[in-house]
Length: 224
Ligand SMILES: Cc1cc2nc3c(=O)[nH]c(=O)nc-3n(C[C@H](O)[C@H](O)[C@H](O)COP(=O)(O)O)c2cc1C
Image (cartoon, rainbow, N blue to C red; front, side):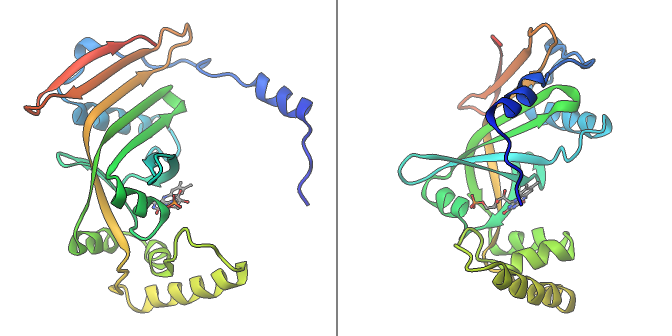
């Protein structure tokens, strides 16, 4: 049974928490590259090397048909000249939101190094071949999850999921090329990327890249 935590105990725990109170790296914006992908890759590898757990877990924000924002965590599948790649079911809530309004934002937070990266842009769904290839390089569990499908639908019972998932794991083992038609790779083409370095004295360093119409990038510092 869930143990009830009353408001005073909750607040005591909440207010005892600290942020940016361990030694953090610096961020010399004068040294920053002319475009954001190179800096993202550098910061990502640095965060992983610093022991940041799951630095590839990112928030994906989308907007529904009524303009209401939504957000959830996804895994980053790549970052290259086309943009930031991720994958999900086209039939999920986020898939429907992206089909209706193909704009999104990504958020990474790497507390081990006090860094945050935000990315905004338009999202394109890749074709069937690329979406299939996305699964081909991943684990049996990833294929099983994709085969289970029905993501974001209301689930009748945990037993129903257990049966569908067991069947999907079996099929993923027996048929590694099994088609998962709703599984879709997406690419977010960035127009804005912000790098934030936290600082104990709250003199956080924020560097935003904004893409001009000609494809070149403007770099600007932001007040923290
Ligand atoms: C660490 C982590 C990684 C996840 N990775 C993915 C992913 O790559 N793709 C995906 O569809 N869901 C992933 N999920 C589940 C999503 O957060 C979410 O529950 C699911 O996609 C349904 O979202 P929706 O109802 O907004 O469409 C992940 C969850 C966590 C906590």
